[in-house]
Image (cartoon, rainbow, N blue to C red; front, side, top):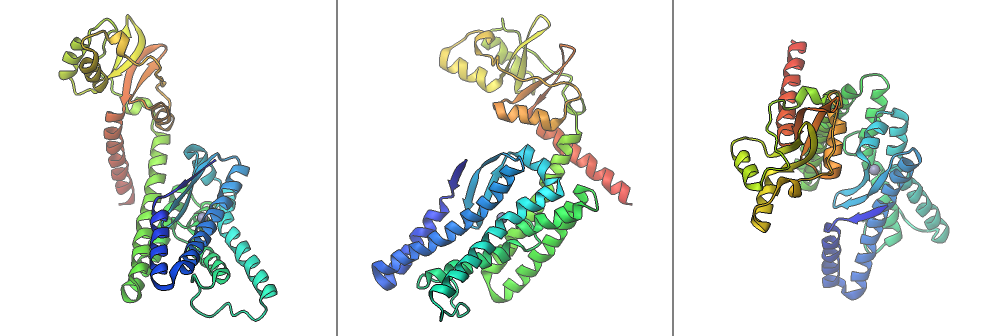
Amino acid sequence: MELRIHLTFLFLLLFVMLSESATTGPTGAARGMALVAIIFGSVVLHEFGHAIVAVRSGVQVRGIMLLPIGGVTLMDPQEHMESVRNPTRETWISIAGPLVNVFLAGMAAVLLFTLRPGIDLWSKPWVTPSALAKSFFWTNVFMFAFNLLPAFPMDGGRVLRAWLARKMEFQQATRRAVTVGHIFAATMMLVGAVYSPWLMIIGFFIFLAAQMEERTVLFQSVVETVHMEDIMLTDFSTLSPADTLEDALHKAVHTLQDDFPVIRGSDLVGVINRQTIVDRLRREGNGYVQAAMNKAFEIASRSESLASAFRKLTTRGLTLIPVVDQERLVGIVTLQNLMHSMGLLAETRRLQRQSEET
Ligand SMILES: [Zn+2]
């Protein structure tokens, strides 16, 4: 598992160091850094909570990313999508993070009350470099409370969706949860407009994140229900391995295609794109397509879902996937035309939904 630290954390560290040392000297700077470490550590442990439960329920975790606004647990997208659709599993993975914070806050409170019986935990300021143990307690209390807000991208939003998804279709549950998130975000922005610009910024961010979650789910549902034959190009140009690169470039000029399947007789032997042809010509002069083409390509069948084909394309860094039916090339899907078809499909579905509603 990898841990990615967003650079902004370093700036935050620097900022706290500078502002503290200006007022209280080197001890202040050390305490400021310790406070950053506390916040940082709480975020990491929160994400570890998600990651551990995710791994235990069979979702591959690629790493944890830390952003200025919090952490993100990076999971295998396909496995994560499947797990999200399982309400029980999704609830446990989502709740695990905030539970870690409750546990840490509870531990801190118990320790503080036993070690320093007279301590006043409730007096302000709650998070400050001059009271580190208290700051640890409050950081975790805040993280717990903030993450349980029923709005994406907070964990509470996921729990809410999982709960709704027990009663309705997943996509509808997402839409409802997104609406609740929007109401929260709008309220935060309104309150923030009066009291604090920070609250406004956070509200705005939550608003966008909710939108993104809805789009992701919509995108997923599209790519899973669309098959290669729905979107493949059936009218396309091919190249032969015996073509010279100059011939190939000449052909490429006369078509809108950027990617070409390479055919010998009736066999598909490789794929090549315009950029590779141009690069080769520039670097090594004229040669044959045979030597420049990519032989390690993937193929798809007519009925294969776009989701599956998309995975093949992205994991291999390819831009073209030939569609084969009984060992015969029947079409191609390129990244270039994929984006275009996806746009058209989304539009078609939106129109369908509109006509269903009216
Ligand atoms: Zn979380």
